[in-house]
Length: 202
Image 1: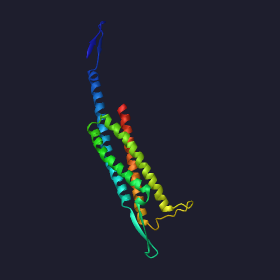
Image 2: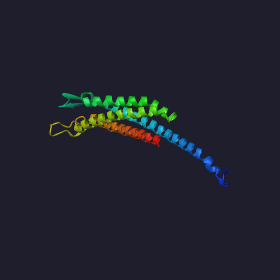
Image 3: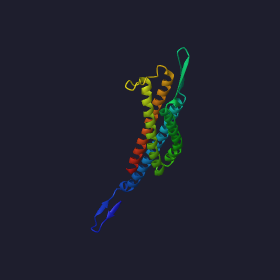
Image 4: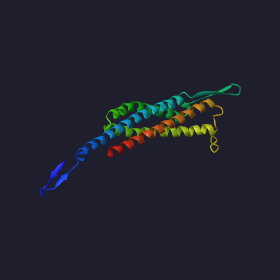
């Protein structure tokens, strides 16, 4: 494009430069929205994996039950998760975590369809942190009891019971490990939401 001023000088402006600024801005927004959609899909997959982990942990702990016999089957002692309040809390907490994650799938789908819908992302971020704290607390508490079941505590004269209740200890150990998998997945969800907020500010 050619422009003339009062002195008669002519300025030549590149048409490519004048026309190329707006499309660059548009392409930047499109790339950002595409990245947000990809992050939304990753968020959805992580939630599905966390649901499976939380349900598996609750189901494994909730079905842990074993009866041991002593003195040629004269005495029978049963070990069950509901004998330990910490394990009962663990089952309830993992069930709550799984229930929340199932409900959150709807909001996750909304963030995929509408990547700029900030309210859904904020709600997910807040409740994800709350559920993460609940899952981590229940998993840590159950892990402490499982450790005592395997090793006991000589200072308090608590005896290890896993020699007598091997199957029970195996199931509760698997439940605790699975719950920590759910905790890690929830941490990834929180980090993903935080990264999304940083991306939005840019």
